[in-house]
Length: 314
Image (cartoon, rainbow, N blue to C red; front, side, top):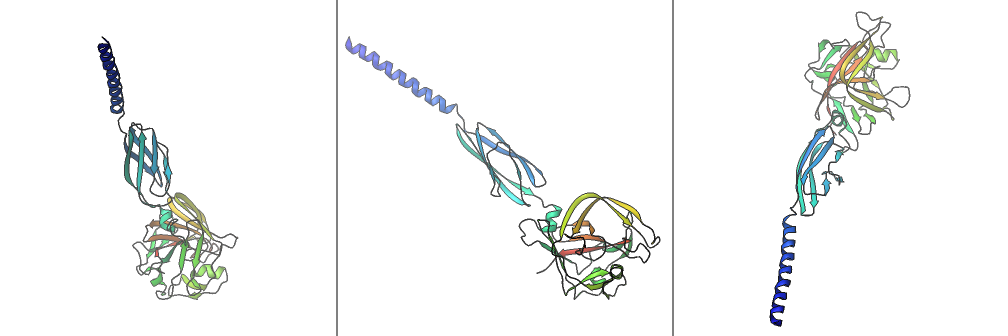
């Protein structure tokens, strides 16, 4: 009788152990591993990320530029353009899962201008030795009417192909510097005469060469797609001025810390606002307003010289 009792007691213990084992096994089977995919949208340098995950409770993001996040749907702003490999790790009760994707950030126009934060000493530009398509003297009218194409480029036009190589340097922090070659710069003769500064006439009547000391505290601002309004004059009405507004243009402006407005870009004249017609990492075409009349309003822009610039050689 005692053997029977112990026999049934043993069966009961084995049954409990079996139920517990089965229960533990079912718990493992009902806790699946996480899955995760990356969804993102790019707006300039800022990327909105979302982890499309299942069975996950926490996330770790690596944005590919040394920055991280533990948010499920973080937003991240990159410092400069490039292709970044982004990784997210999703973790839950059932384990972890990874997903990666490459995100491409296109360079803004301002980064093309300055080289971005990776270019510590700024990006230097020089007037191209060869003319770009569209280089010309334009009227400062609503349509920037072409008055005279410049097939030889500005350097060729003024006969200085071998002696002029000024560098105009834009820095990522907004600083602007100017490396003057041969201690002289290109100047409009109207500007030189009205400011009583010496100049050497060039092969072109409108411009010459004058001694110049670069400014030390100049800065620049760059704006895209803005309305630019300036008072202008013309050869036909050189004793009058009126305003013209150019809509949706890209403009940079050079400013000095004092009121002398000594520093400039490309061609020395009165106006320190410049229109960027096109820009890439390898070239840009910029319009410089010039004063080229001899009337009582000679210090107002009447024309524009549109020139091609390229990254300066060392």
